[in-house]
Amino acid sequence: MTTRRSFLKPFLAMSSLGFVGILSLIPVTQRAAELVRGLPEASDLPTSVLAALLLVQPTILLLAGVALGVALTEKAGLSSFILRRLRGEPAQASRGAWGSTLLLTLVLASATIAADLVFRSLFPAAFVSITRLDDVTLSERMLGLLYGGITEELMFRFGLLSLLLWAGLRLTAGRFRPFLVWISIGVSALAFAAGHLGVVAGTSPADQGVLIARTLSLNGLLGLLFGWLYARRSLEHAMLAHAFVHVIFWTVTPLFARLGHNLAQ
Image (cartoon, rainbow, N blue to C red; front, side):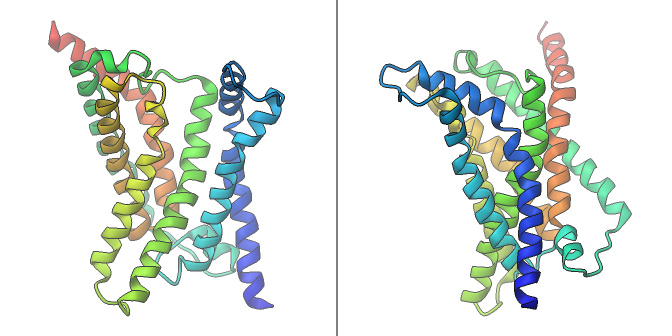
């Protein structure tokens, strides 16, 4: 009974937290459903039903990620303050670590912005239908903060990274941990980056190579950061960094774009 409670309570609480991010998908799925309804062979289902069906996959991924994380995080030697609190265990964090997490995130996010702008300047035709990192609506900002900062971290770091590391440690009897940590970080980062390839859909075949390279490399770089923070600090550091990345995108991209325009003149 104690073992069941130690799983069920954190699972329900963290799933509920992640579901806040799922709810932030509703405006996006509504627009996607409207586009689907406009296709020649579209289903006769109402738009609201189609939009709800589009939420099924991320919900399943969320629940699977939380279940894996709750079951395996501590077995893999990883940490979550929320998980420990929900289990009634002490969970204290170093105050200085939060500041260094924000600083490191600022550096990596700024590098991502610069690389994205370089891609856009070198291949302008490929980005005609791809909005700039700061060109986002209010609902898209909420999506970045909630779905990105919370739900995706529960899926890819708390769930997938924990599973990979736990499995690797089991298969090697606990040997090669540093190597296995980086393999787990890398694979989960690649999966995270691949999850953003939807941006390529609908673009011309001539542009897809550039967009795939840009999407995988930039999101993969950020995925490495989030994974490293989870492995070295805690899940909450990865969540903070992920949410903060979007804030940097919205605020720093216009500054970099203006600087690049001035330098080009």
